[in-house]
Image (cartoon, rainbow, N blue to C red; front, top):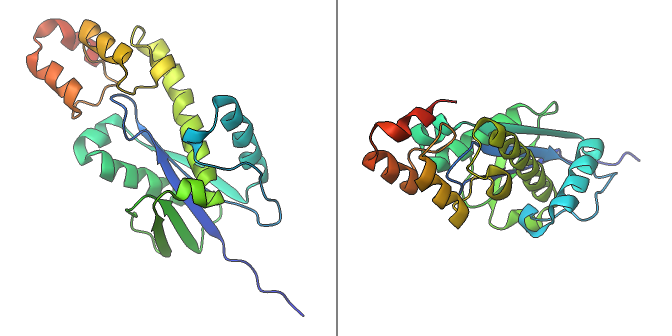
Length: 204
């Protein structure tokens, strides 16, 4: 007797909606039911070392995975919600195997050609979404560490672009750089009050 094949279900999540700098990332993951990965969870609940370990496991054992981005310019043009949805669409489109159903963390879904469901808190409830959360978070953190080399002095290695006290102090001291999201309040306020001196940092 033949057993029915399981649906190819992709979990999708983003990372980086809250920061003042850097792109937003998204990942899509189709897990292999025959090869479960232990410990998948909301990436925010995991240590950096645990996320790195799980990233390798996901990349090695998932049926398919992909990470995609929406740029700072797209965030400023579209707003962060729509840029996040765009990054999710790009992640799914980049999968080497296309899913038959998509589960998205949160309360909003991008438009996809297959059945899609938004699940609030899905990164802690659905392993495939948790896996996507981990890939998106690790990829974005890695990029922000690299960005410190292009824009030294802001402390991107530590805060990854989030509005910490240290980041806000550096922003006031140095002015915004090209990595900053100009549509976000603290950055926009500085740009509106600034003349000349700070503007040179707006190119890499």
